[in-house]
Length: 332
Image (tube, rainbow, N blue to C red; front, side, top):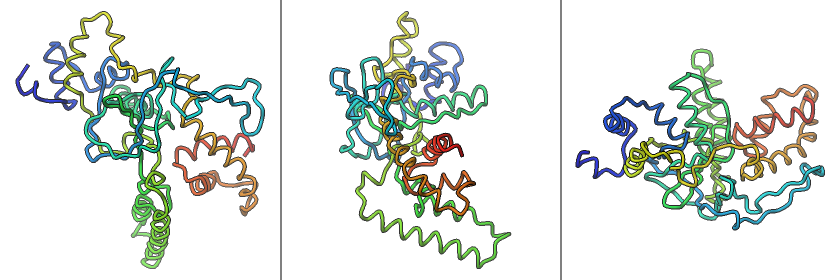
């Protein structure tokens, strides 16, 4: 082991791969690293190069959770009522929960470990499949992206100004400009388009003045909404190599690195509760909105997306999910 290696707190994936291959005297690939992380043998981290807004929280035990009984869904009584954590804690493992405090809005940076309890697990599976099978992972996560460091769990956030579906946002205006085809659009039409999204921009910036910093953000849909690089802590790499010959290799994970997705966990997540409230609101308002359309009996599905994103201020992913529920309930 080189002296320089001992001084490094973390390694890039390329450096880590080279070191593991040399130590084990066998080749290892980037896909192997992703698989080892997904199977909870190795803790993968991210270096948030330009920082990220986040809510902070911590892991708590079952004894710290208060539950409330849910007896109705969309106003209809349930045949089998169920319980949800009263403060929106997210179920991680049998007796562990993540509690996010929304009053702890912070900007975080440097190196944080992936917990694999949120959308970061989907991202990692996507990267693995792209390198091995070439297939795309189409699963979507609504919990957000969660990272951890020194016992603190952070839920990464994205500014609505970076949401291309938010009218007047920076990303929205950028997309509008990119959509202009100068070859098939007159100068007059181009100017009209630009004036239109500039008006939306001014309107949106005025709206932001009266909004709290926390409310200007929403849970990130994936790691790609942040500037990051994958890294592995040197201490974690040494632990992994020591554990290679250990019969207890399957039990080397941190408590937070629990299985990503189980059916019984869905209703225990903040994401499920928030999506439920948004869906309930959409179902209540949809009939009235439908009657304002020129063709109530044949509304374009894309128009429903636009209405949901504008009315509920949700992301494209959330709008797609809520739209599917609306289509099924109203037999569209």
